Length: 63
Image (tube, rainbow, N blue to C red):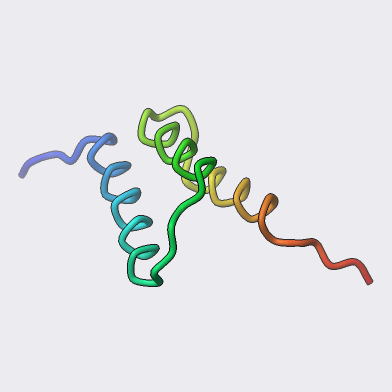
């Protein structure tokens, strides 16, 4: 059985993110694209990238 590399897993995850954006007819911002490249290089995780995007784009509701 062939072993899947970590790079291949990261590439597939990023491809899925971009495919989801295309389905929703959205274009990633330059900061998201930079984050995806960082993730692909293995310098950050997709979870951290998602947290960064949410903290930047989603307003925090205060009661």
